[in-house]
Amino acid sequence: MRKDIHIHYEHFKNGTELNEIEQELFEKAKLAREKAYAPYSNFFVGCAILLENGSIFSGSNQENAAFPSGLCAERTTLYWVSANFPNEKIKKIFIVGGPKEFSEKNPPIPPCGSCRQSIIEYETKQNENIDLYFANLNEETIKVHSIKDLLPFSFDGTFL
Ligand code: THU
Image (spheres, rainbow, N blue to C red):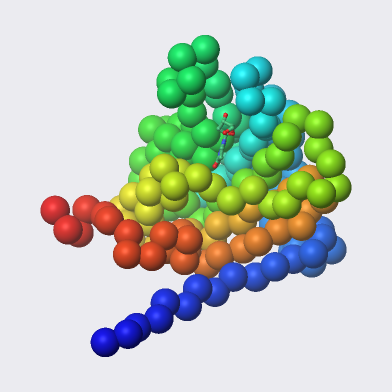
């Protein structure tokens, strides 16, 4: 029997379509991006995370001469947040990425597969969705209601 999966997302053409908290998250992710340590790829990514208590934390990708030892902005930030606020729910994750020298042609940068898997872990843990946004430097933004929209048939702890 054939079945289809539909994913839902929103596309904001620029920052005027973002609300106040989304705008703040964009700005914090953009600032974090500027602190990326990415001398090998020159691809700069920033991430801002909003917690249920209203605080926002941010981080950036951290590369390494031994390439696989580097870490994406999303996981750098997620793991720090989870290590320091293990009982605080994550409400929103906002990602801003692009080459160091940004051009108008660069699209919003979606999270890589490993980061999607890591984000699923925290959605499962807190039993509540996390709004996920990814944007380019022009604030063109894609929003999904849950990382599951970007990772159908995902594997999580409920299978174990
Ligand atoms: N990168 C991220 O930080 N997040 C992603 O989801 C995609 C890739 C980083 C990893 C590496 O430092 C650089 O971008 C190029 O892959």
